[in-house]
Length: 141
Image (cartoon, rainbow, N blue to C red; front, side):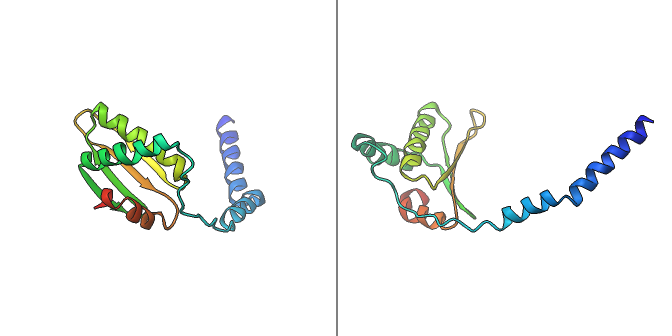
């Protein structure tokens, strides 16, 4: 009896998922949403002048000097850095500042074991790759 009840319950659940008007309406609403236009402009007022100065004179040059490699991705770029504590702190601080002034960037920082390099992926909506190439040219090249 338990087996029949379990099979019946599973069958009903599957049928509800296959022909559920609510799911169809939700699916239609999700796919019918128009694309949001993203403006690629940095908010220079998001950081204090001291933070901006540190970002441009210390952190960005530090990242460029530490970069082990860069790789072009379909939606952005991935950079590899040494995984030591000093570089980790520098990358984390740089990301924290960049996300204030460039909120359209998506950042993924991956840190493996002590011998593996740390990676930073920067991506975002359509068009962000070209923005990265132009604004972070020294990092990309």
